[in-house]
Length: 340
Image 1 (cartoon, rainbow, N blue to C red):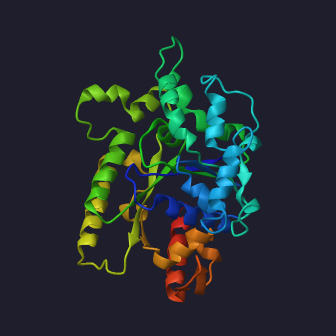
Image 2: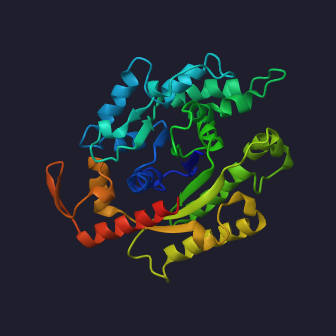
Image 3: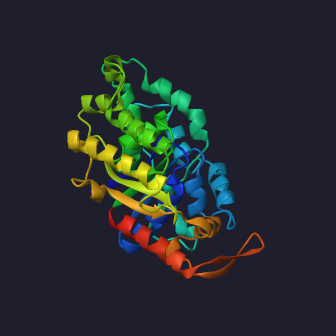
């Protein structure tokens, strides 16, 4: 059975994509016998750029080449296939849209395939919204559209053991398509009050918590899925991301993160079906700020487990990676990946 994880927070700047890159790479290394698919559902395609080489090794160029291919080898290319006949699943070959990342980036595990991100998603979103809201007797047009990524995964016919979706920091229609296809959500948060509000907003958007009026209930994401007897994705992990060495137990940062944890604990106690964990401590992971180690990793498209310490060259400059810091980053990502 394929398990689908979504990295998502509707707030930007939480380090979602960088976290996803490191976590999926480490997970794939550990589960080397498993087939893994990454769906980049963000128009910025930053995840795809990292996977395909990063800044210094042609990641951006490789992404653009995939967009320029006839048939467009990307999520946008697949959506383009769906637009003319949106309510029926066409016959197609998944390999027409998927690439293996190790063909482009030698540092990545060979068991990772990619459905590349594509800025055309933004152009497609208005059309997709219109199609999802059409009124056709006997057809739930919203659910037919919301199933597009699920249809793709099903068309792969059990090829993949695990699918990871890097979502856009929004609740746009293509983000809803991604979340509706997911079993579990990984929510990164930062140590600031806006992240506290964001996680409350995220849970409200997905689960309909604390909506301001009953008039919205019929239109809620959760309601529309449940009407068709669909499973709602569950929160699997909340990642306290970019913790710095200055975040001691008495710091203001820790106070905010403690409030976020208490918020989640209260919601889990009243709505346990929204979470995969019973004990709130099991649902939280601390990840330090990657700092210089992360800059080198992302610029070169090299995951932490493949990196070595010492002096590195970046854009003609020599930069040092400290052994102890690299090892701590590696350890924390290993812990996170081990919870998947």
